[in-house]
Image: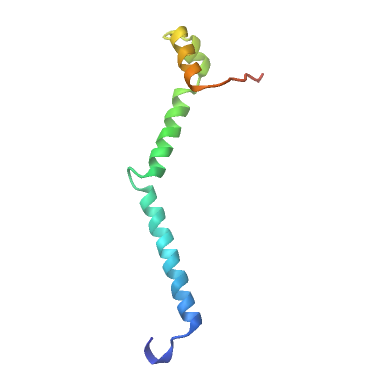
Length: 84
């Protein structure tokens, strides 16, 4: 460093700032379109919207009860219903 200001504390500070910059760059990249974070967020939203009213899905106007039961058996081991 210039003028003899190369100290262990200064080097440690530079190392810390570089780590912070790297962490921030990683966060920005994760939030970009098509990132894993965005894909997981979209998947969660889709599941919540699709299963929002499970009773309607199973017994509603457009339900095919036999098909719904078959699909549930393939993906779910058990369902526990609790009183509200």
